[in-house]
Image (cartoon, rainbow, N blue to C red):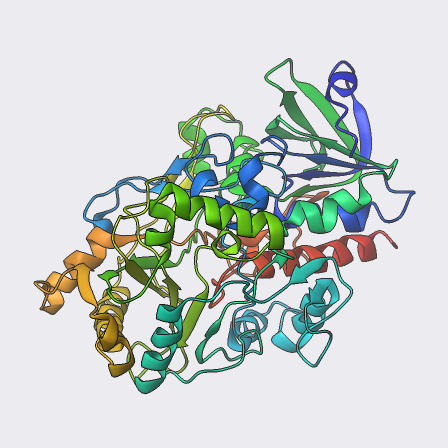
Length: 546
C-alpha cells in the first residue's frame, strides 16, 4: 500500500481515473475492484489513520477501540426526546477498514424481503435473487460453498471459537418461547435463533482492510493516503465533478483531479457531510452555512435510519460469564495464554455470539426484532465489565419507522455535523420497544434458564406498565451502530442517487456505501455494505467499458 503522503501533497493537480473517498467497508472493496485493471489509476483517501492498533486484530478488543479517539471518530448524537433527551456516543471507525475494524464482526445479510422491497421501489437489479450471488462472490465460508454461501472469496466467514453454558440455555429458553433453534441465518428468512457467523480468520478479526486492501497493496496503480481530510468536491459549470480538495495531515490543501469519477464511500455520516460542504444538498441548510449552492438536492442527509437496541441486563448465578473470567489478573492471564497458543477462548468473542429473530407481536408480517445476547455486562463501551456474573440480552427493532438526519453545523470539514436520530418518534416504534422488553422477560423466565436464577437488573422488575417500560427503553436505548439511508437510492424527490448509484443531476460522482439504502436491512449492516460496494464497482466498470 503506497501511502505517499509526503510526495503527493507537495504537488498540486495530481490526476487519477478514480478517487475513492473513505477506506471503510465499501472503500476497501472499491479500491480492490477498480484497481484490478492496471490501466486504472486509483486514489483511496482515508481521513483516519492506519489500522495498526494492537486491539483491532483481537476480536474482544472492541471493548478498547469503541469510544477510543485513536480508532473511533467518537461522534455524539443531538439530545434525543425518544431517549429522554439523552445524547449518546455514535461510534464510527477512524482507521483503514473503517467500522469493520472496530465492529461486532457479525456476518449478516438481512432478509430476502429487504432487497425485494428495494426492487419494488423501482431500483432495478437490487432484488434478493440478484444480490445473493454478489454476497457469495466475496465470501470465503468456513464450511465451503453451497446454495447460500461462497468459497474462495476475500471475506472470511467462520463460526464461534468459544462456548458459554448460559448462551446454550438461552437458546433452549427462546425455543420454548416460539423462536426455534436453526443452523444459521443468511438464507433469506432468519426466523429463529442461532449462533452468529463472524468475519474472523482463525480467531483474528477479518476487516475490510485485511480482506480487500492489503492483498493488493503492491499494485502500482493504487495509491492510499491516510489522514486525508476532504474539504469539498470541485465542480465545473456543467455540473461535473472534476476533483477534490484535500488537506493531508492538516497541511495545505491539495487538489486531486479525476479523469473518470469520484466515489463517495465515507459512510452515512461522512458522505452527506461532504456533499453538503460541496454545495450539494438542501438549499436552506447550505444558505445558512454560507455555502455556494452548486446543486439543490433536498434528500442529502435526510432519511437517517438506525437500529435502536435496548440493552437489558440480568444477574445470573451457578455459572461463569466473561465478567468473572475477566475480573481477576489470573483469569485475564489464562484467557490471554489460550488466545496466544490456540486462538480460541473468550478473546475471540465478538460483542455478541448468539442471535435471535422473531415477531414482536403476532400481527407482524415477518420477524421484526433481533436479539444480540452477550455473556457479559457493563455500563457502556469503554467502561469496565461488572464484577458479578451477568448476561445482556439486547433487543432491537429491525424496521424502524423513525427517521433522522445529518446536517453540517458549519462550512468547515473538521467540524462534526449534527446527528439527529429521532428514535422512538412514531407510535409503532414505541410499541415495538415495549413489546420487545416483554418478550425478553418471557425468555428469561423460561424453564431452561431458571437454574441460573436470573435477576433483572435493567430495567428492573419495578417497570411493570407499558408507560414505565417505554420510559425504560428511553433510558436504556442506544445505537447498535447501523446508520444508513442518508443518500438514499431511488426515484422520488428525496432520492440522492439512482439505482446505478450516480448522484442525481451531477456528472462524475457516485455514492457507494450504506448511505444509499432506501430502507434499512433487517439485520447487521456490514456485509450488505460490502455487497453494495461489489455491485457498485461492477456498475462503475461497466459504464466505462471495463
